Image (tube, rainbow, N blue to C red):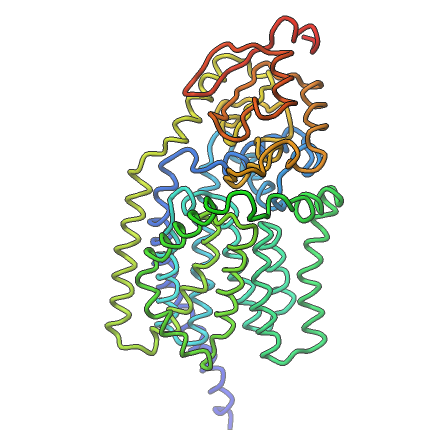
Length: 492
């Protein structure tokens, strides 16, 4: 009479032990693979201008700057805050702490994908999804895949959104969508598969309300913690000229095709089973196709097609490949994994051994800048390499850290829509006031013949002619120091 109730308890204990043993074996494997695939990220002090921009923003915020007021960018606030926090704990002289956080972000993403796959298709599928994701996660130009920037930190939030929605945890799913969106706007694309899962599980008013509240409250909180009007302007309404295909159609098309081809090559082990997964839509993967489609739309949004945008495609690709591989013969799985290992090795070698001429250029400029100025001096680097400020440990004279915000060159646009009239609305008057208030001791023209060169910008051309004189050239960049007449106008 007393033995019957023990059976369910024994079953629960057995399941708990099995689950614990599964993750005890899988997590170390995923952690080792995450570390191995991110080794190149530690090999260089900096990978791309986005990292430089975030590093300079973090230093300015630590000095009392206000996001969307005296520190501006077109991105949401979470990653600048994360950089600021990492610098506060570990110092601002190295991005190593951010590299470690990027490894953890990739590990968390892989674990969430493994959990999703295991819930749907079993233990082996969980291992497959986690491993395939990490192998393909570095399959882009290393400056896109290895940098600790927006897309890498979007991925765990997007995976968490689908993971929570798959389990009917609608408030948590909405919060994960919000975290992705507050890391980068395009992270909000994961709301589409979450809504599909809500519909599939039987739309309820309570579920809709919890999902909506989870999405809205963190975004509202971030707006209130910054400047609400500035938050809306810089993250939504102020980027109409930036998010345009007009002006550099061929340039953008070549970039789109190039980065698509690179990711396709890296996904050579995944694409055949993904094609096979087309036939499995009725078997429970329409949400994964929606996830892939919404991520592809996010890559397209803005018409810039940078390589790091494509990272959003990798989680649904890994899951779709897993969905097919778990019903295909075992040799197909072995082929997919071995192919992915080989392509991953090629991309890791690219990251470790390929030269980075733009980094070398920025380091030369920074060394010259540090030599010619003092730690308290403000400087202006007119170009698209904000990392020069960080490498030189010098404070910018303006909140506009690149020429892009003042000319619309951002995004590599090289056509006719570059110039003062295409700047962020109201930027040039603010720029002039800041240069009057904090007259830079040194101006570095790093345009090197690009469409945003000072001789094409009347305001900057007049300012340089009236207040500065050329004092040297370094690696193609022109250095200007204040002239005697400039000092008399600008003060000491």
